[in-house]
Image 1 (spheres, rainbow, N blue to C red):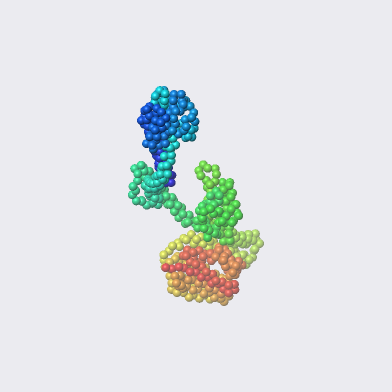
Image 2 (tube, one colour):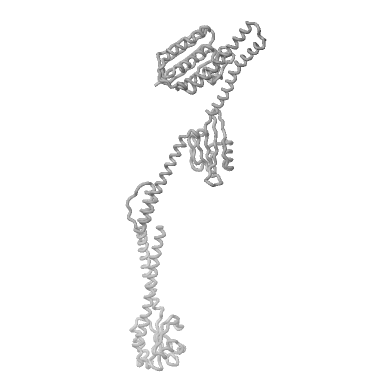
Length: 573
């Protein structure tokens, strides 16, 4: 706009100057022409006395006097009524043609005077002719070259050009200053508009009255824009906070499969934590998983919602592909991908499946044995009292085992549901361990296994029955899976901010391939030995769940045929 305004002002100024010079030149030229004509007329009138032009001597004398008194190169011609040139100051009379048809001559004889401007063949120049009738037989004609007038203006043209250039320079400077003056308030408004959009109020402006409505409108728009920007920032920050704190992965693509947004969880789940989101990055730069890329392609092209599970070595993820499109639109504008970590769910389903199978097996086995022996007695296959007594004892044993399994299942269910877990009573761990050991003393003595307790006088807030159950299962397992004449050592001590319970034995130990699963329900390392010892396979699972209730950590140290040590650490304030 500034350049255009400057050019317009400059063009108008130069045009006005040029027109002024042209009109001035034309006016002056006209003035000089008229002045020349008037001078000729005056000369003619002053010299039109017939006495001055009566003979050749008088004619030449009068012409010489007039020419000497004039600054111009004037031509005198006397023509008679027949058109013959009697005298000419520039040429020989006998060389001139007849002038009877000349307009100025005809008019002079008719009206007393005549004037005309035309090209003269005699002197090859434009001439102005003025003729006056001296008497009835003679006309005096005076003429002057028009080119001599033009030559006078050609002489002053350099000065006119210089003046024109000076005026052009002045116009240039004036146009620059004037343009800046005009646009200064506009420029200030422009800078103020930037300040407004940045949220600052800006300084007070001196603007044209005509710009006040525009300034008010800009101020109103500034307020609306700032409000709109604040709303967008709030929405953006809110969305960022939500997505960044989501445990699910969040990924948004446009229809060209370029990534618009991705949260930290999404990068972690796709296993590309160092991915840096910038403009125009395609999803293929995030993951090269062919199945995922194929599902993205299908979902966008076919406008199809897809659920797809991806399994890794340790994790299970579920991908939800949801096409994004505007309301009432048929074409897909993008794709929203939500990634859910279903590892816990999958593991729980697996554990439920295994638990159901194990429970069925654990309950079915003693029931089958009991039903089999009962049918044998019913059918009379066993008749002697000794055999009946023997098989009834086996039925009783299997029944007790069945009751034990059911009780352990019910106890484990209560522990998982944390029933009565929030008890604020202080439990003396040393006294609890002594009570548990006294309950298992006879069992240990029958196997000639010694139990040693080394305990500090420590307390913790917990449910006494749960803690007692935990110690009972640990010590009972150390007795059942020990060697004859073996030892069980129980340690209770304080280690920094933890209370540590350690139970170690000199038993058969646990092979390395089984150590990761011994805390699962019904998992047994040696099933035949478990049946002999009456184990249900739920003891260590109960220990694990009780430890979890009170934020305990379990550590297992074991070597096959060298013994096992289980360490549980409970945090204390």
